Length: 432
Image (tube, rainbow, N blue to C red):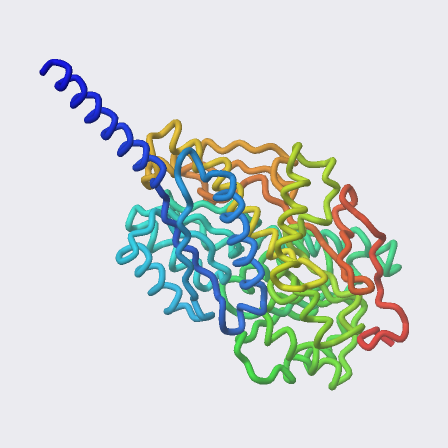
C-alpha cells in the first residue's frame, strides 16, 4: 500500500505539473487592433499600418511570444467612421474582453477613443494617429503613444522651408509666400496649428490658412483662392480622396507652386499617388516618421536592420507593392516597441498584463536614439506633464519622391539626396 500510495501521489503531482505547464503554454494576451480596413482612410495609410502591425505580431509569435504569452490579436474595422471606431473599441473591451486596445489611424477616432478608454482605466497603445490634441492637457494615465505628434509635423515642414529659402529659392525667408491648407478634423487642424506657429516664429510670409471638410466633393473655391494668393510653398494636410481631388483640380484650374509639402496620410502613399498622377507625383515632399528601410542599419541598434528587412520582405510579399510606405513602419514599429519593451517588463517586473502593470512598464521605457527601426528613441512624458503619455523622443523627417522612389531630404544629418526645389521647368505643377 505505501508503494501504491507513493505511485498515486507521484501520478497526481505529475498530472498537476503537466496541467500547470499546459496552462502556462496556453497563456495569452488579447489585443484589440483597430484600423480602417475599408473606407477612404484605408487607402490613406491605414491599411499599410494595419499590415505592419499584423506582421510584427506574427513575428513575435513565431519567436515564441512574450514571456510565455502568445499574442492573440482580434482585428476590427473602423470603416473610416468615428462612431464605428468607438463602437468597435467598446465591443472589444466589453464583449471580446481584450487586455488592451492598439492601432487607430485617424486622429478623429483617436481623440474620443483615448478619453473613453482612459476613463475606464483600460490600456491603449496608439500606433499611428498623430494629433497633439489626443494628449495635450488631457492628463491621460493609461494611454501611450511612441509615434510623432502633429505639432512636430507642422514644425518640421516650416523649419525645412526656412533652411532652404535662400539656397534653393533665392529668397529671404520673409519673402517666401506660404499657404497652409488642411482637412478640418483634429489631424489636419493640429498640423496646421503647428505650421502656423512655427512659420510665424521663423518669419515666413503666410498668405493663406484655410481648412475644408475631408469629405468635400469640390475644392475648386480653395484652389481659386490659392491662385489669387500665388504661394511659393503649399503646406497641405489631408487624407486620401481629398488629396487626389486637390491635385486634380489644381491641374485643371492651373494652380502652380514651387514646392508642395504634405504631412503624412495620403501623402505617404507614393504607389497610390503615382498610380493616379504618374510622373506628376514626382518631387512632392512628405513629412512623416521615416520609412525604416530608408535608414542606414548601421545607425540603429544591433539586429534592427534585420528586423526592418523582414518587415519589408513580408509587406512586399503580401501586397506586391514596389515601395513600402512610412505607415507600414509606423504600424510595425509601435507594435514592436510594445511587444519587445513594455510588455516583457510588465510581466517580469509588475506582475502581469493588467492596465496598471502596463502603465507602470510604459512609464519606465527608456530607449535611446537608434533603438527603434525608425531611428528615434522612446521616453514617455510622465503624469502631470501637458503631454503626459506622449513620446518625448519622437521625430519626423521630410522626404521627397524622386523618380518613383522615396528619399530623405531633412534633417541634414539623415539626408540621402539634395532636395529638388523649386519644381523643375516643365513639371505639370511648376510655377511659370
